[in-house]
Image (spheres, rainbow, N blue to C red):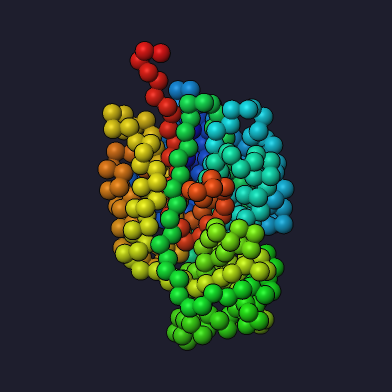
Length: 363
């Protein structure tokens, strides 16, 4: 298997895909456009990053679907789930999805509806920086828009680890969503969503919406799972009706609270995500596991030139033996550590590890 990430401009021609296909003709090749590429303990914009994987006892299967608009996202997830559920030893799923034409909430819900809660589902939504115009996904073919790729991993020896942590700090009172539709929120406590942001951000930050809104996401308590919180990033505003668009669905009845971040807290959160997966590293065989980091473009906007701090924090926590690549996304897919139920996250550092159980020399 080969995974690769690059900017939309770097991937548009398909040349990178064809180069990797020629170099690894027997491999499954997948990738997506990014808002910055992670490699080792650095973040780059001027290079495509790629990693090849060779499994000894794990089978890898690729399924892909086309999603014309967000309304088809749940059906897409269900179709991908059916395609991957053909064997009873499915051990994990990694997803790359168009970040603009796919509703990540519904995509994950469709996968869970077919595969159940026990199969870990990880991945991310493709990005094009702050342009919000067009994202690309390669699923065994040159990259294009409206594509969702899902990789299934099979076998008792395969292990998918995952860690997530956001690090944002809530401020202001909790409020309840009183009118919304999908990822569009009209009112909270009867107040237009846009008016609430104006009240707390001040005129200078408010004038920069939606871009400045990436520095002020929402914490969501879902009405059906109040103990599980998720972060939602601002993606757009409608000044005509006072509504705002977010990086995932926010249902009526959800309790929301504004958030803000500091460089230190976001960096600490990245280290915490690494802590959750560090136990898969075998000091005697550091290349027996590899990690994919999927972080949010909103975190990169806030941290600016210090963005590498969160990547370095991951490397230090893992003692730097594990090969790592990744990308900055429009949404991160990972299970909650406590429940193992997958969800779409925003503004969150997520880490997924791929490894195979060591085989005893006495076997």
